[in-house]
Length: 477
Image 1: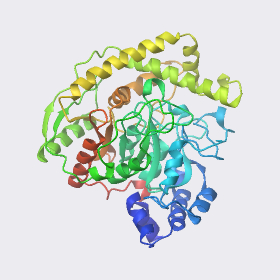
Image 2: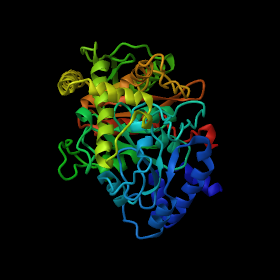
Image 3: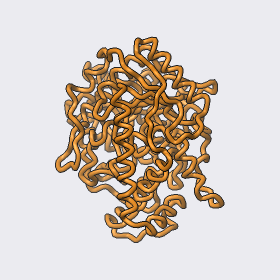
Image 4: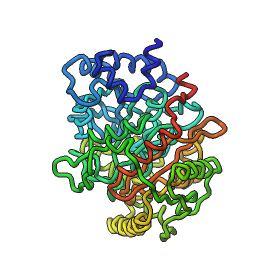
């Protein structure tokens, strides 16, 4: 038991080194992960589809000699498909669907030697910044089981934070990598648009806002896994600028003297909890102590309707998801098969014109240019990750008496993160602060388009200056 508990909080790089040194076999790593999932999942509900037999066969067989050979991970049950395993996307409509093939991203995970031990929980179609689908029930935050782990990659984040696995697949359309990473005390990088593949089933999300990557415990894991997965797949509609060198080589490299802009208020002007604004200011002081130049500044953009325009994209996204699955399954969707908030978006979409969507994309692309112009004057833009600490479960529930309440709360909560889904810039949240209640409070960093290198250099410097590896959530104790 002692060895398994020690393994639980090693990062993926350290676990892979044990396999390379033949100190442990891939199968032993996988069995340790399975044991921990079985022990902790009843309290957290992070893993909703165990894949133990598949994982054991893979770990006991001829695994590829990739850099993460034998390391267990979970796959978020959204977008990424694993041949022969159900994909529900949190929806009762898909409870019987089984993927016919691997997504390109999953194929790259396998080539890296990673072993997928289960599917992680997600809200229906990833449409909420919490993970409480009616189909599978809520995932709970390992730091406080009465609170959300964030969303929509909350199942992956809870699994990694509690030590079930060192890596969890995640995707991000408005903050869904960074929100749960912030809530659970993890590293969450949303890469540059098109850095990771979405094929073969998708080319981009609505307006290019969907990004794929992982949540991890260390900056080096985040960088090294990106080296394994980055690059366009065949026929990709877009390509991110190629990196100058492997991302892992940026970890530990001197970031130089960076010019950092600090903003503690979202562009839309909503209020921010003192814990979140205070954490960002505290980290800004740390950056200054490390030799960087920090000044308060924010993009001067037309903010009046950012949320409204993004909502047009999001309504189209949810309605598209329903129609896409209708086409793929040959079944007719009905209201009783979907959660009320999502079905409202399907009905709203039916009353809109296609040109409404294109006008929203045009307006948001104009905003992206304004933000990009601001970022030309700075190496990094530093903000809180979220406007509030992890909220109680149920905070984002649909209210039939006030149908706009949930969407309003969502927009307020993840206001800092959605901007870079619009712009396509890389951004990362780091677990540098915990509040008086013992909850992790993430700090958010954004770089210029294509410049993950600067983020990784700074993130590694901050990780060394204020390490978080020794922190353990109560559930994992």
